[in-house]
Amino acid sequence: SGNTNAPTIMIGEKVSDMIRGRSEPRAQVDVFVADDWETNQRPNAAVR
Image (cartoon, rainbow, N blue to C red; front, side, top):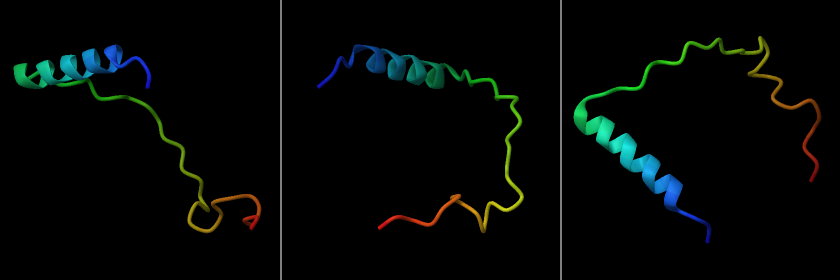
């Protein structure tokens, strides 16, 4: 098992923000979606 101090503090800070009614700012990023994402998920066939 690893050190759980940092994740515990992060969860506590997030919950305290939720209790106080503070929300995170929305991310302003562009998302890339390939035109053929439905038919071409991988470049090669699966190896079994």
